[in-house]
Length: 393
Image 1: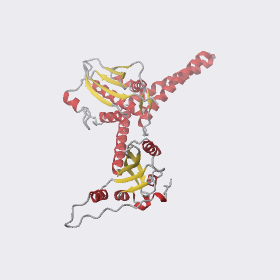
Image 2: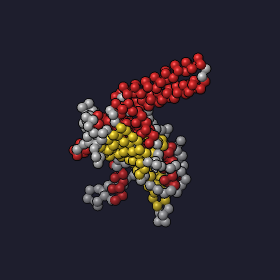
Image 3: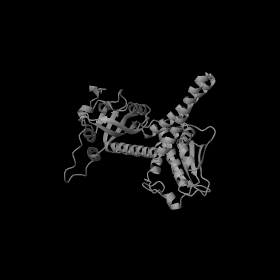
Image 4: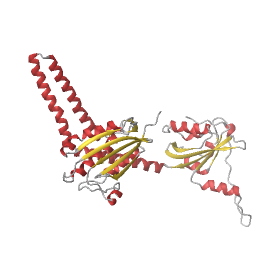
């Protein structure tokens, strides 16, 4: 949108007063202020809040350098002059609301220089009030944070890549179990199809209908197994939605059912009444729980089966959200191991990467939650995920 430039509001940029000559008094306060604005890195803009569209009445030299516009091109316009196609409309709306309400606004916004170059700008706008408390002007300070923003984006991309690699590795490790899980419904489909063909000879409609219903049920089950594996290995952007933690936990136990059976581990899911939903990406929550469940299974598998092997996932309501506790009856860990549990590359497994728990904690924290570990009262460890509940709209 082109910026409006009312000629009546144009104002010349005030030049800095000359410094005191040798032998004269020390530099004046006005000169020091002007000199400070001239060398400051942060750009400063003052707009007139008493006039519609809040025209700009002052820009600092550092702001001219930041945006590439000379003062004469900016004075009398408004801040839309540095906005462009990539500027977030919601951020612009929030700025407008803050100005209308006389509040301070601060945040990041994508702006554009005169030559069209985009840059990320950390903006802080504060109101100036007169003696009667009326807002007369707004002062905006602006900093170029493009490098910081790009670095954060790269960090997020790297975390996403590590999480995706962890999911692929997990599915690969479960390859034999997944093949077994899929083969079971496929074998049932074949058996029921053959039975249905035999029933055709006797024209037993009820038995044919029952066989076909079983075929459909087993086909859906096989499809669900394949789709779960596919969702885990597929790279896709985070998509938060209202999630039932108990349902995701149940899917995780279904996913490792064969592994649990081979390891002779008794597993159970305990879900409290009235469990609130949480805002989360269901795939990432599935991965976090799956990582912790596989860790528990491997810990119990590493020991001779002298002790009962039990795995429990308990989902409970807590103040402000949901607590998901994954506990096992494995060998546990000493104080030193507990202290290093979430350190990068720390692992107690012969073939471990030391990234599983780190990825899990990152996934939990990305959803505003936290992950904790403690020893059980008896044997083993308990990992607890705390997640905030879905905020009502």
